[in-house]
Picture 1: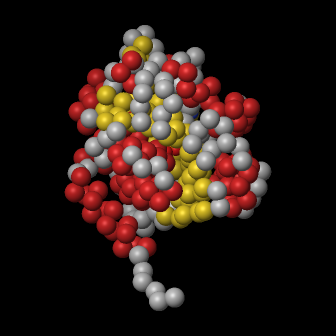
Picture 2: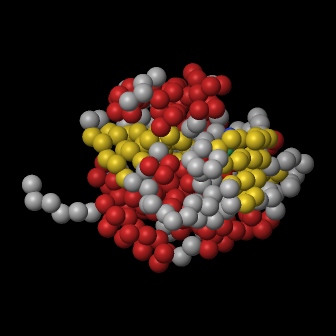
Picture 3: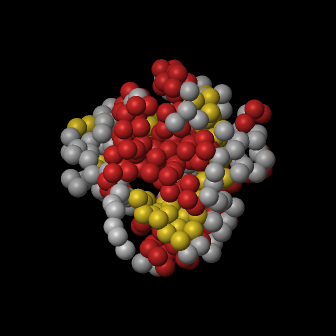
Amino acid sequence: MSLLIVGSVAFDKIETPFGKTDRILGGAGTFIGLASSLLNVENGIVSVVGGDFPQSYLDLLKDNGTDISGIEVIKDGKTFFWEGKYHLDMNSRDTLATEVNVLENWTPNVPDHWKSPDVLMLGNLHPLVQSSVFDQIERPKLVILDTMNFWMDTAWDDVLNTIKKVDVLTINDEEARQLSKEFSLRKAAKVILEMGPKYLIIKKGEHGALLFHKDEVFFAPALPLEEVFDPTGAGDTFAGGYAAYLAKTQDYSFENMKRAIIYGSAMASFTVEKFGTERLAELTRDEIADRVKTFKSLTHFEMKA
Ligand code: AMP
């Protein structure tokens, strides 16, 4: 069971109604890697950082179990930087700054020992950067891709060409509407599944996630938490938990994807409890098992038909 992750490793600066941070560890690849390690799945990140990236952040990923040999360090370059500010409802945010830095003109370089992963998780990056990975590796058993409205606005054709080649597409509800030009998520899913992906996951933040495949649909709620401190990385942690569960169980059926989504939701529910990666970095496997149980009881009920 192995999971190859291609995604940003970054500095984030975050402001929520509860406080602000300086530059802290962030990036889609980071959250996906941490979530995978917590589920005991062999994982490696392919990414790039600058000479300004602290060794302690790389050590944190490594010590938790991620293979960081695919993270290039460009000594005289600056690390990708993202700054965001959340609104009072914590469901929406403004991006205040995106400094692409070393991610600009970067082409992923998959290390030799990662040329045949079971599962490939392509984090949110330019679609051409994402698709450049296909030529470097054997076709994995499952390819999952996350993207965002920014790429639909700026690289529409490349998004369409890239999603054609993947098994699972994960996007949020707004992005699903933009991609399909349909308002109803059911109709949107139908249109998007005709674009190539066999499975579609529509993330709805605190309203959970939907999984579509052919005519089937599954819904998982998000855990109603007493406190949501910082939602940054929740979507990536969800994708990481989902991908890692599938890589671990080696069962890529719709039925098992339902369980994978519950794992993804459980992992994401931790991320939002503290700033950035703080909560994932201190998380124990017992806490994960307890939360998955909580999820089960949240939605389980008996009824005589
Ligand atoms: P999420 O909250 O799950 O949407 O993901 C937030 C993470 O995505 C942050 O840690 C950012 O560093 C990272 N991120 C934001 N914009 C981009 C981008 N254009 N390319 C790559 N990573 C990004």
